Amino acid sequence: MSGRKLGQEYGKIFGLLVVALAYVTAVGAGWIAANSAGAHQPVLALGLGYLVSALVIYVWSLSVDNGSMFDAWWSVLPPFAATWLAYYATPGVPPLRITLVLIVVWVWGVRLTTNWARDWPGLDREDWRYLDLYEKGPKPLISLGAVHLVPASFVFIASVSLVPALVWGHQAVGVLDWIALVLGLAAAALEYVADEQMRRFARIKKPGEIMDRGLWHYSRHPNYLGEILFWWALWLFALSADAAWWWTVVGPVAMVILFVAASIPLLDNRSRERRPGFDEYARRTSMLLLLPNRKG
Image (cartoon, rainbow, N blue to C red; front, side):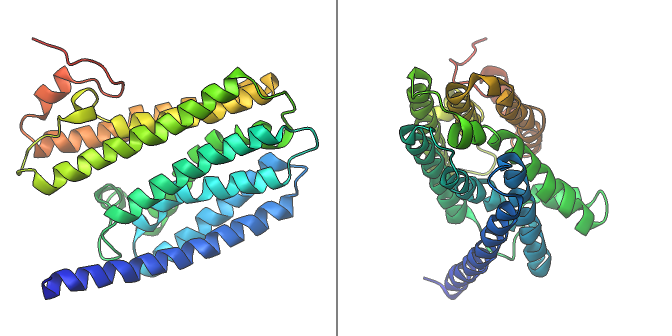
């Protein structure tokens, strides 16, 4: 291994240690904030925990001048939030449902966090999307709002489904719970396969080449499809636990809007600028759903 490569590896390891310390403090602060609201107000507790933990990561990101530290928040906090809520489940909540929900959330969270850690380049590089955002105004304010609080708000809205599923829903475990389990695990598996296919492609691709193999032959963003399906799985758990919480459907709907209206157009536009054949690929390939290629 060359000296430069070795230095990059050590730099990444040091960066991951810094990130790990940051998230230990963020989870701890979020847990304390949730406790301050109390188990009798689980939605408020969830919101406070998310807000405080996001602000802690924001402070850390300022200290190292790298907003990409927040990317892992998306998958680190929900499993701990689910665990906190499960701990305060009211009498009568089926333990089996609690187990099923925690399995789905932790499998998803560990998988996504591990994937992030594998690809994260280190503290000396920041996501190009954030760098573009910083050009629109004062960096600390843009980072606080667009990089940290906006994504945290979407995750909070989608995570409210955990409240009936883990704390208040007394309905017996039914068919919807098993569908949610299968859907949630399938979503994590879909993300895993899509990310691994892209990772292998990145090692051998030529400049300007388009990934149109495997799952990416049927969808331009199969990993995002898996992410969306995970949040729909959480909503199905909530619906099965207590149908009166049907309105938490705003969570997965918000995720669909986030990816379809913001994340996907941003990535597609960048690909159009960097890959001459992307327009043709986009014309014949579904944006999100796994569908046969369009001909002609």
